[in-house]
Amino acid sequence: MCEENNRRKKMTVRIQPMRTNRRQLIERLESDGLEAVPSQVSPQGIIITEGNILHHLSFKEGTVTIQDESSMLVSEILNPKENMTVLDACSAPGGKTTHLAEKMLDKGVIYAHDLHAKKVKLVEQKAKQLGLQSIKAEPSDARKLQEKYDKEHFDRILVDAPCSGFGVVSSKPDIKYHREYEDVRNLAAIQLDILSHVAPLMKRNGRMVYSTCTVDKEENEEVIRQFLNHSPNFEVDEKFFEELPDFLRNSHGRTEFGLQIFPQDLQSDGFFITRLKWKNG
Image (cartoon, rainbow, N blue to C red):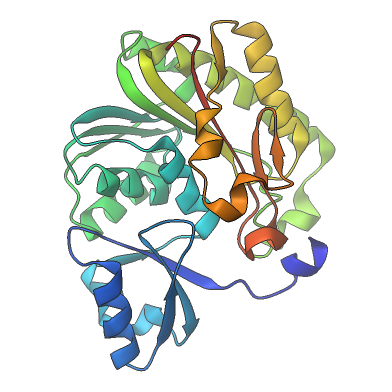
C-alpha cells in the first residue's frame, strides 16, 4: 500500500449518460489521440491510459467528470432509481451526488447537505456543469437533519463520512504529515453520530450506504459494529456483496461489516463501503 501511494494514480472519468454513452466517448477520445478503456467498476467509468482529458472538449462540455473508480463504486452500491427521494448527508464536493443524479436520470430529488456553505457551492457548481436539475443543495450539519426531515422519509441515504483520508494519500500526500491518532478517534465518534442520526430517516424498504476514503478499521468496521450494537433494528444488507463486480465479490477486503478496498487493489483510492437496511426491510 505504501508503494502504491507513492505512484502516480491513473486518471479515471465518469460519463454523463444523458449526454453521451461510454462507447461513443471512447471512440471520440481515440479519434482525438487519447487512449481509453472501459472501467470494470462502473458502467459509466472510463480509464484514460494515454493523453490528458482535461484539455479535451468533452470535459469542457460537461459530458464527463473526473472521479476515482473506488468513489464510483459507492453510488453503484447505493443504486438509486428514477423518481426516488435521496439524501446525501455529507455531499461536498459533489462527485457522488452528481453520480447518484445521473443514475436516476435526473428524475426524483436528491437533498445534498454539507456543514460548510462554501463546500455546498462546489456541489451546485458540479451539478450545473453536468446539467443536473434534481439536486437540492443546502448547508446543514448531518447530525441535525432530524430537525429538517421526518423519519422514514428517504428511499436511499448516502453517508460518505468525513474521515482521516488514509486511502487518498497518493492524491493528498500531506495527510502523512498532519494526521495524528487523536484525529482518528475524534473522526470515528463523528462518523458514528452521523450514521446514528440519519438512519431513522430511511424508509423501511430503503437502503443506506456508509463509505469513507480511509483504510483505518476504527473508522470503518468498528464504526459499523458500534452502530449495529446501538441500533438493533438495522443490519448489513448482505445482498450488496452479490452485486459487486466479479473481481471484488470474493475480495480479501470483504468483512462481515462491508468491503475494504486498498489502493493496491484497483490502483485507485482506498475506500470502505457497506450497505445497511432495516431488519425485515
